[in-house]
Structures are given as structure tokens and as C-alpha cells.
Image (cartoon, rainbow, N blue to C red; front, side, top):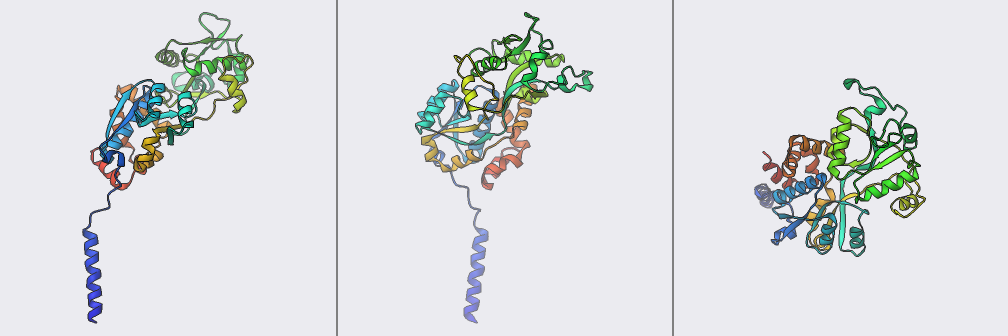
Length: 345
């Protein structure tokens, strides 16, 4: 009996100690615990700025990290990542950059997670051209427009101001990779004689031309991509293209190919790029970057709100964290989530 009482007392004591013990702390980041700064690429497009600030907030408030942003072109930042001068490239479009491809092949950089799924790029028209817009009193002027193959018969709808016998296709600015691809596509789709290959001088000029046409309810045919504020502000329809073919894609990316064949752009992989040194040194933050994902429709809407309210990227990141706890809490351990949540009140 005495032995039983001793066992019971021991069990009660153990239970009391367990209940008094603090909750298990989340694993610390080895990189940050050693006092090192996590350097991010200072990328200059809107979705990448937002994602960079979102990751910085999570690292600083959830993992007690010091972070910095180093500005530079995307190619310069990819080269810096390969040297471990920076540790994180917030939105890497996998396979699109020679600098990234060579560094990845050499094992100097690593892609983690899928930070944005279902991103898209292609040729678009406003939804009201195909479906109309009763609220604005706009009737559908191209109800049969579905595919790039339909475009030659709609050239008058997209009439170019300077060459009225042709339609106008708004391409990317000269110097952008997509400008060369779209120029080849115009050849592949037999549109050289029916459409002007119009290249705006800058990205903002492209945006202004699209927005002006949409606000006036006018026809406009253009190349675009997501995630972007433009896709969050307006309703567009992406025109159908032939199924993806790697062989045809290679003819589109080669400006010297005189007989390109058409294909939809390859699927996008938007991932977090990290240096190999950082990847191998910090399994805790590596696991975080594997988990981070922002739904593309939500991101488009957030970017449109940023534009409308003139918000800076850090303010937009905080707004996202305040509004979307169900999304970001899935990225981190409960203890980290609690620390972040405490800063958002």
C-alpha cells in the first residue's frame, strides 16, 4: 500500500512539473541566432516588393532575425545570390534567367516552395468585348473572340491610329524578354500583315495604354501577366493559344528563327530563391520558405488596393498579415505565429 501511495505521489509530482513547464519554444533560426543578417534582393516589380516585405516581417517578428534589402537589377541580384552576398531572392521565375539557370546548375542557388501558384501570362482583351457590360452600357463587340486564331478577322476592331488598315497589338517594351517572344508569336500566328507590333516605351506606358482603353470601354489587345495590380483592377480574358510545345517555344525565344511555331507560354514556377550557403546552414528558415504561398487572385487584389490607396510595400504586407491569419499561420509553428500575431494588434 505504501509503495502504491509513493507511486501515486510521484505521478502527481510529475504532472505538476509538466503543467508548470513552459510551452516548447519553436526552433531558432541558426543563421539569425548567430547574429547574421538575412539579406534580401531589392526587386523592383510590385509583387516581388510585397512578397519581400512580407517575408521580412515574418523573419523579424517571428524569428527575431535582422534583415536588409540590397537594391539592384534582377540579374545582378541573382549573381549576388550565387555568391551568397544576398541570401534570399523573393520571387524567382524559374527557368527564365540565364544567370539563375547557370547558378542552379552549378549548385550555388536553390529554389524553395511555390510562393505563387497559378500565375499566368499571355494575350488578353477586356472581358466586356466578349461578354459586354450591362452596368456600363457596353454591348459585346467581339462575342466570337476566343483564340489568337480569331484575331485576323477582328483587326478592324483593334484599329491602329497610325495604320488604320491594321489592328494594334500592345507588346512589351523593347528590351524585355517577352517583347521578343511576342514578336515571334505575331509571325507564328500569321498576323504580321494584319497587326502593328506596338512597343510602348516603358512598363508604366503599357499600363497607361491599357487602363485608358478600359476606362473608356474601348477595344484593346495586349500582352500581360499576373500577379499584378492590373489583373486585380479589371476583368480580362486570356485568349487561347496552341498547347505548350517545347520545340515551338524554342523557336519563339530565338529571334533569329524565321519560321517560328506558336505555343502558349510554358507554365510559370514562381519560387523563393536562396543561396546554397544559406540553404545548407538554416533548416528552420528553409522549412518556412518551403511553406510560403499567396493565392494569385488574392495577391492581384492586394496589389490593386496598394495602387488605389498609394500604400508602400511594408504597409501592404502588414495589412495582409492582419487580414489573412488562416493563410500565414499555416506557414509557421504555433509559437512563431503567436509572436507575429502579438505585433499586429
